[in-house]
Length: 593
Ligand SMILES: [Zn+2]
Image 1 (cartoon, protein in one colour):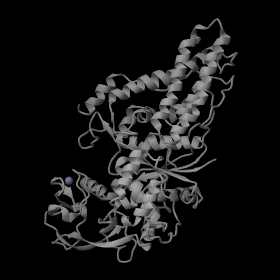
Image 2 (cartoon, rainbow, N blue to C red):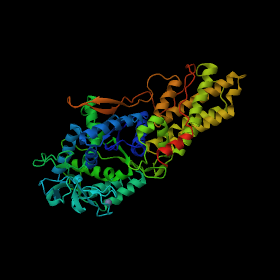
Image 3 (cartoon, rainbow, N blue to C red):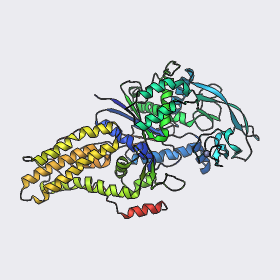
Image 4 (cartoon, protein in one colour):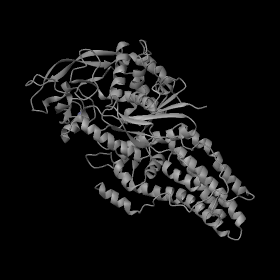
């Protein structure tokens, strides 16, 4: 039965280009999952976009002497191009600075507010004594009360990562003119998380045995100590607060995390409108049979397993104090939160400032997207923190992609093309032939089962076992020595080509570009697995912006397809680039090792 599957992918923050650590946590896993689900016949809606509000964007823009909007425009485009280059099949990858996103965010705020889940709180805010005006958080600097770092900002310490209020800073100073701010009473809004303790408790308990244990354990632990959470800041870059007396205040905005999680919904609504059926999003958000899968790094579990479900429950009138659903109607909460651990680089944390980094763009300029996708699937941080090393990347590329899979494709197709010009007709099959064919055909179910549960490492290893078995079979059967026995040679090559076709199908979610090539090499016509593209769109004739989208319903199905004898074959081109071992030293030199 065909199911509606929402793939909700974490929103990359648009204050700079993204590195391979970022895309290993959310990008590639969510795409592997979505491609598999489409092949299995489900209706997938995969959405995300760039997260463009908040202090770090403003700080970076101030540093570069541009506006926040200009900075966001630049990195929105860079990130969209990088994710397209990786072949990530978003139905819509948009951004948080659209009018649509502002409207949806304000609607969710109002719904929560009307149901009593948002309340005002008086806190101490900074003003500039010389001008009497509000001093936004990012313009206040001082010593962190937690770690002692002396460059902490009014909203966050970049050294220890803790969120702060300006009044907590020791020796606070204005970054504009060095004066000491004065603190006056000011109002902010809080999300009443304790009012969701019961509903979140039963929600999380119902996920036992279904979610990755680390995610569930983390989320359940947080339940015991839910605190109200600030959802507005003294900030001039963000979504205005949609209440009279607040809307027009230039220095009060919704906190960036609050609008960013709403992006999953606003992007779905934008996708529906662009698809020509403005209500189409409801099939994924209001259908109890639909499933919503959220992909992110582990630092974001709290937002996806706790806060976003609380917001959805509250908006839908299903929090501990009940209420009524807002004008969008009741909304479904995440079915599963699929969180990855962290990737480090050559034993160190990724760091743009310390140059321990490789950006997606630079990676794709030198290596194939499928080579990175393969590495992330087989050796990425699925269940534990893992280390990316150039040595392992080169070893896996050359040993597994080139020598095992690429070589199987290449020698089977080139031998059949050279000797017969087409897929050969098999004669009588031996036990060895039948055993390999059956091994390959039977792999679809377990590999698919692992993919449907986001166990990518198991899935790709099982698919690669078939590749290894096929190489062993060719080594044993030695078809190249059977010039005198063309009938037997035909049978062996037929078997090998059938297994290449099966393996190509099973590897498609991981390696879409090279699988498309194998599909064509075996005589396939049309699109096998669709690839994403960038389109320029606008809102009501406003400034154009790039989105990622695509047509993904190609021929690819999660099933064994018998190959047809007589299908013409051309000599193949190599599937993957073999890497010179010198690459390792060159890359380490770039890292300053
Ligand atoms: Zn600190």
